[in-house]
Length: 385
Image 1: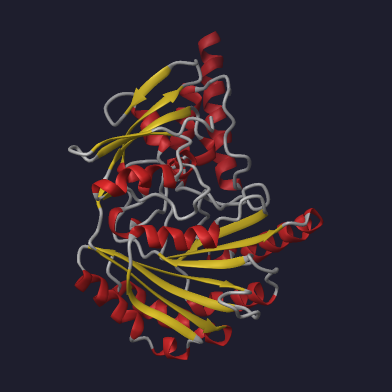
Image 2: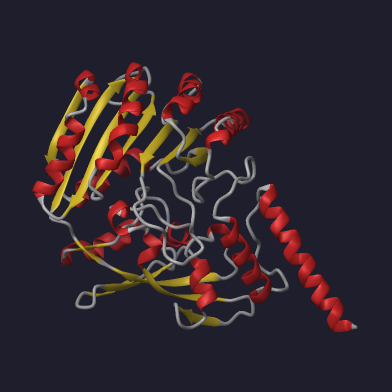
């Protein structure tokens, strides 16, 4: 499916039809000359299809919602080999499930029909490289202030080695704004710059006007590690930072060499998601990546990311599909009622099981599947009698 990367836009209607294997660069190259954008993903090597099926935390998603909320319709091949169109009025089960089912989707998506956004006018960045000794102060401070940030301001941090010339672990604390105006962007960045902890930065670049292309290039350079070996795991949490910090320090103390890193994103949702399979979000998202080239390190890296995030289970709301590790650490990836609805749709539209579901699921989801299978078996038995 790698050749299915076509992008077709309607500038007047601000819509696009995008094939599954298109990448962010394919979409941006068409949209930017028209002053349009879409909340596509940060990582350059992720295709649009996988990104949207799992929800899609894209550019300016704090303001616009997760990317799949801007999906108007889809084309899919179902379990019977039929090409069908689905939206909220026709074949609506396929539309509901495509927005959040991730790798457990029961069809093959071929086209996404997208609602586009006007390119924001106030695009700016700030970035601070903090010593690791500032970790507690930074996290505890953000716990008190992150809810005040404008929705157009994305705030996160990368903790890793070999950042900006520093061999020891540092915190790359950043803010990116895609605001309606430069004044709005500056207001958000001033909130960051007023935090006492940023005065302890090794160095900083603040209130920097830029283009969307500049932002994308920075993340391309940071996250394009194609060909390397990845182990990842993540969790959502609302827990007080004081409970998380001991495990965060343990993660940092045992962090593998660069480009391995721990990433935190201060999401702070302001609305319930639309009626769709996606239903997992919380105030803070934490994701751990062990990245390298040596196959002999795979087992150790796998154990490191699994054990590190599993230690956070008492404080976890669940995991986010895309950077999950369901094989090693099956965790809740949507609300249980959504999973039950998804499995009922799967039983209805793919009764022969032609499509794989999620590779592993947590015990509470196993119980849901067992209940549904029992009910289905009872119906078939009654029908035979």
